[in-house]
Amino acid sequence: MFKQFVDVIMPLAIQQQSTTETEQPSQIFIRKLGSLIDMGKVSVVERFYSLLEKPRNLIGYSDEDNYYFETDEAFAAVSKACNDVGEHFPLSRKALLKALKNEGISICSKGENTRNVRVSGGTKRLLCIPRSFFEEVDDEDTESEEDLPFGPGIVEESPEQLTI
Image (cartoon, rainbow, N blue to C red; front, side):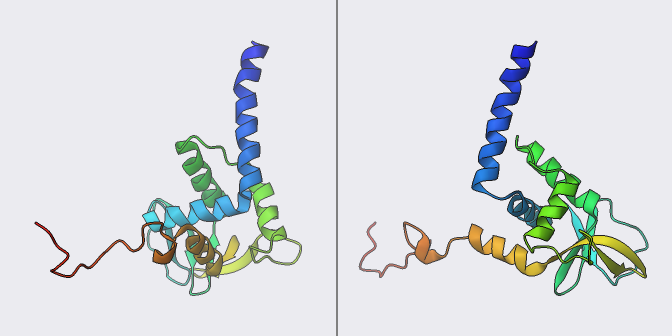
């Protein structure tokens, strides 16, 4: 039984180590969370709107400058997204909040890993991340037409170059 345990755990540990070495867990979190928002798998609503009914997949709020995430819901969504593709998110929720703060990604209240934020008429402790961090990750993921090895996707040919 111990041999089976080692056979299962060692590959997972090696995969987690290589993931952590190639990309910071905080960047994985930002990338996955941004992707979930873009695909509509999670909901983020304007922070000053009064909600009559909370959407089922609500993980946070936004304004023109920042996203404000419910820590448990955002972490659970990213962990599930990782698990769905056979990956393991390498940090606990508490360790992630601390890493985001230490890396200067999240905006926090003094001595805390979250921030008091007024949303929908009340105050909550939320994970506050500037929108600019999500835009930076999007910019890294997309290549410009000049970077593509085959050039832009549309090639205009003159009628003389066309052959039938």
